[in-house]
Image (cartoon, rainbow, N blue to C red; front, side, top):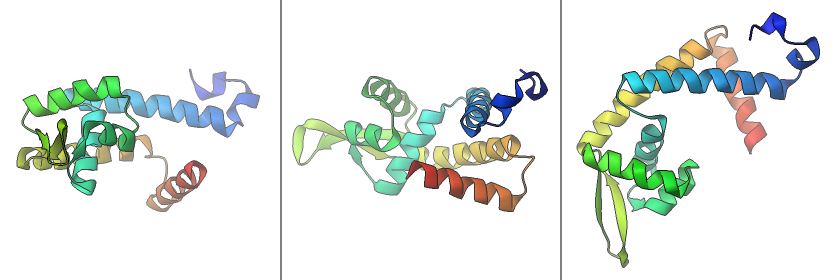
Length: 143
């Protein structure tokens, strides 16, 4: 849908605009990540492990907002690619601890570069200052 085809009342509603930008972003991220043999969830999991260190699959999913039914698949994919490792949790042998591997750290850097490029493309109409302001405002809304 072209913007000028949408009713003016819709075009003035921030929630509608955020939804449209979100849909465009998700589409571009999905296409770009698929071309890079990746998934946005892979980036989220790897980023969480890089920032917070080894953790349980459940806790990683909670940090990233990923449903547990999807987490199992993501961890399996990342394990098969050598980006994460599963080891028994020393505090509870019934549970696995997921950790970032050296290959996973390199993959995180690749995906970060890819996602940064998509962000720049999605927000190309904004200056760097405007992008920073938008990020700050969206963060405030979510706090």
